Length: 168
Ligand code: SF4
Image (tube, rainbow, N blue to C red; front, top):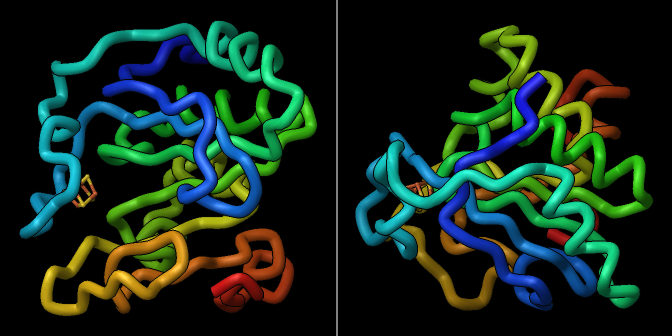
């Protein structure tokens, strides 16, 4: 099991990256090349730095106000072994997990990749899809363009069909 992940950085307290107060981890490395990307410094697969999952969880526990962790990017699913372990540890510690991805939910589930499915398993809310500049809106909650969806992963898996989150 991977105990380290490659990240661009963290934000220790955010109210704009999901419900409540959240610790945000930005994955380093992204293949999607969205035009108008808000975070191009995260694209290089060998950029950023390695950090131990335990270090992140320990850092989170220093802040009693945190509600959850947000896995952003970059593309967390490029490091699905490590990010799924981080998500598992965060849930085990009582945190809500929100994950951003440039892949669609349908792509993630159709491939039947065990590590991708593991990261989904430990994700409460998934924001999916590439950032599409022509569908950009500043009015959307927790996402940048209209094609992106906030998906309730647990309900989607229980019902075997995509269920949008009530916060959408
Ligand atoms: S998925 Fe996110 S980080 Fe990757 S290119 Fe698109 S907007 Fe940028």
